[in-house]
Length: 397
Image 1 (spheres, one colour):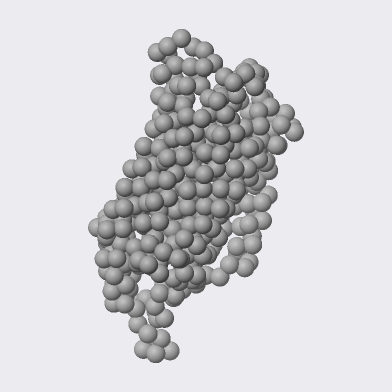
Image 2 (cartoon, rainbow, N blue to C red):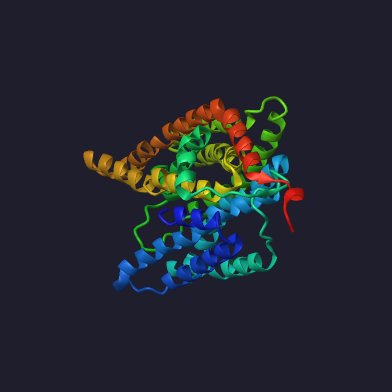
């Protein structure tokens, strides 16, 4: 979260794929190294897990801007959709591979030893094969002749209403996904104890399949959500130019309904809970690529990395950096108020998780606000870009 603005600044001014690859290498090496830290150095383990975020911030801040400069309009929406499939797909595979490695080895450390080799391979492929496009090439067939200062960029972004509201909406999505990733498998395991279809886990390594199933659902819903979002937006653009934020708003509000139903049906039916999770997550994941596309429309190319970085910063700060802790804090507070039992442990966590659909509804409202200002902000970005570029015929060789 803290490193994202730094990489945003660098990504708007230096070779992006080199920064991106170095971030992935750092990310992978720190992940592997952290798996060998003993319990006596727990503080070092916590520090190493935090350092992983530095690599993540370099990648998440810069990658969308490269895609934004390689494609435009509907093709850019489709390519961003393909790229953003990696978030739910990777998260889901993380649950599956991490859970499988932990169970196979009988040691959770092995969950951190699966992905580093894949990360190093990805970083190498990026260095060798990914092009470094000129900034803004698809938007204007010319060359950007001026570059604004970082302070000027920040002032412009703060005044960009579509950017501000879509960033707040993205924070709402991050809040929910962060909380769900931590607590939904635990919640479903407690539901099965209440239904007497499973025994409470009192040992260090629990053989629950909930993480595996939740990971598989995340993979599938991520794929469906991003694809459905791209197709829906493309069709809706034929009806209204505000299609991008409106599709996001409708999907968020629909997602909130099905996520609420999770906590209604989980006590009686695990299968029913999984169905609600499936539909709710699909609708929630619908807006990931579209949000990035909104940013590409309303922010000029020379400050897009900065914009993506601060959107990431805001999403983490207001979203998943604190939501798992907040949900756990509320759940613990509710448990202490009443006699501890399997039923109340299940209910208290469900009541705490009910905060998520309310945050999702708030995110839908932010997307509706984005729709109000989207066309004006896009027009302003187009005018400013035309003022900053010159055609190739005017460039002296």
